[in-house]
Image 1 (cartoon, rainbow, N blue to C red):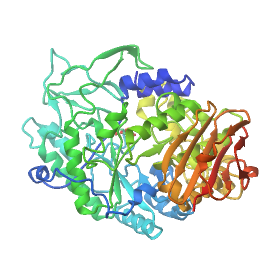
Image 2 (image 1 turned 30 degrees about the horizontal axis):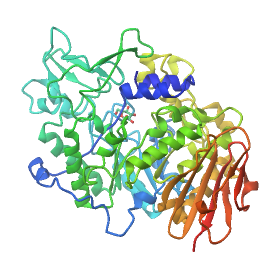
Image 3 (image 1 turned 120 degrees about the vertical axis):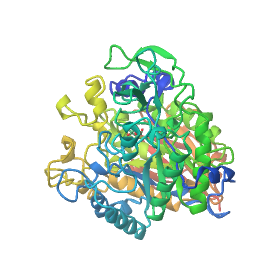
Image 4 (image 1 turned 180 degrees about the vertical axis):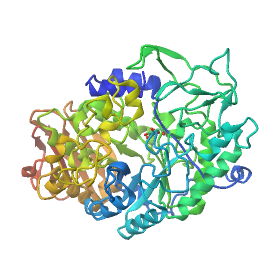
Length: 601
Ligand code: GLC
């Protein structure tokens, strides 16, 4: 089974271990990679990088940062065309600064036919007119930097649009100088070269009638894969990295990096018995020969070397849905010389993806810490490909407490949290009602078994007005009915809102050396309360998350807090608990999240 299948199961609330094994079987969706700029000969000599990321002794900015993902189409429309844009983002920087955000990741805004809403790029060094201009981008960077907010851009290395001039030339003739920039193969037995399927639908191969060969595309047929075996591809893609570094980008989120290379002999992938939801003929595959190939690590080492030499403060974040811990660790590189932040998606896989289960969370986080062995990680609960956490975990009765509990976890684990726009007000996944409403092509293809990703991409809910304050025009996706009740303007005025909870929590995190950089230890084995400690030299924070619908007590061993002054509850999603002195036990209300502080100096 694949990403889509798991997603469908998730939405129909089928739980856990099954989903994990299915994800492991295929995880057909993802990842990506890197870039840099020197010529290949030069870059090979530069392979060794000792993992230097900042001046010795100084914590890199991205370790203490709170990241915020913006899906630009849906964030804020400044010109009334119903599509969000760069000027819209700039107009909301004060809001983001007020929330306490340190960096924003903007999904692709390059010129694009928008088949995959920007992940099909037709020009890597410009801005799509529907999002603005390069001057708007420069202004966004300037204004963000004034507010100490960093800008991370999305870089799509694995594939281009079929409308990119390189591909247009590549497909024009077998003799095109760009022919070898993509992956072309002769037909086999009158059909495609092998059995590989695409993430988005049946075949990963499309026949070009004119030249009589098939081209490979891991995603839509409008997204042909680049041939990274060709050194000219790397050279050109690295040049683009420099282009954006020069424009002030503080880092890159590398799309689908684990798909950069394919097996040179194009062997068939093993096929499972299971069918893709919505299809009666397509079987799920194990992506043995077209995902996570070792060659991609050399590219990443060269890319990191390139960005580090440009400026060691720029960060590389990689999207690779990797089902095994050791594989994920390989993206840091043998000497921490690949990505600084490979995305850790283990909170959105397996049992913890859908069920609020303290033992399961404890076990995932402990496994994460063990695998990391001191490296820095990311934590994420939702993004533009994953249904929103609010309704994944909400029980219909305590959704607000649960959303606050999840926020407490995300912002107090040892790692950089990535929030997804709207998460801070508890936006819900709002799927299309009819196939006519669907925008995401994958939803059109597999409707209704898979309704696509529109549900998590709906416009940001700024106020309770007719178009939720997102646009004055007709929004590209329907405004969720929940906008009347759930919106920024309303929550800004309510002391106990989810929005103000995030604000206070981010402020607390910012001021807490233990939460920013302390070590992590899991405490006890309570089946309902996930308890852990973050400890720095001068401060200890104990976090207790009651993941059950009942009041619970927790006995504390004195040595856990190791306090020299009385410990107190400094933060909770039940304000009445705050200020309470903590001795040897804690009492938690249903779904209560508590942070207890002990000062050791
Ligand atoms: C990544 C993006 C996803 C996109 C795919 C193909 O997984 O997150 O939205 O469809 O790559 O580029």
